[in-house]
Length: 117
View 1 (cartoon, rainbow, N blue to C red):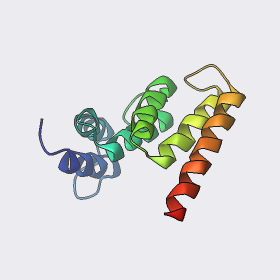
View 2: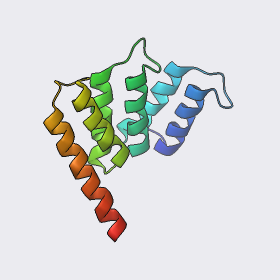
View 3: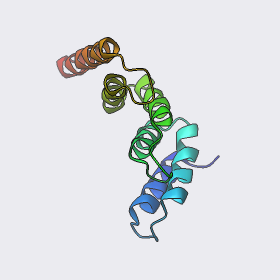
């Protein structure tokens, strides 16, 4: 399996071409290795990559939603927000503005709770 944090960082280096020749597909492969081990940051970046079509021929919103949901389940607030956006836009899922609003409200409550502690 390997060290997930190193796989995440290597994946991002390949995607950006930072210290290595840029290769988005290879970068995505490394992110997958980290994401499948539960690395929340890798899961977030997989969601971003699939949303933007990085490392794939075109945007894959269903895959984006899947990875954002995995990261959101671990408490990633940015991923929770992105899940709401995908629901509001109807990308990767049937458009559901009520669900989007509910997710955003929950996200706001989590942010508020974390600042009060």
